[in-house]
Length: 128
Image (cartoon, rainbow, N blue to C red; front, side, top):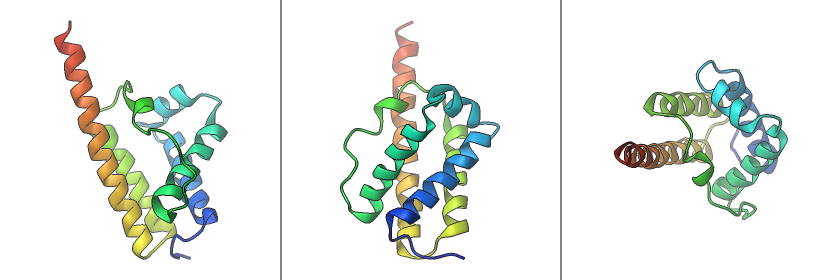
């Protein structure tokens, strides 16, 4: 049953469901599993605090989300798939303003990360 995102429990449902899909995905799974390896519980905890801060305004995340992603071998296809799975997960479990905000913020984050990674990849190519 869909409901509004309003508690840490909701955030955990979103994050756990989403990353469950990521881990099994043919395109994204090998990348995430290859980088995270056996540190999934740590990664999920970090994602709980990130989305708790972003969506609930409860400031529990401290850090910079982009640097861990900077050297990933990803492109637009990967970001499109990531965003599709995220939006699908939100729609499966949630409705309302926070659900819409979650999808909007994920889209903006994917767009920004993709542009930054493309820029870094171009810089690395021009140095060769």
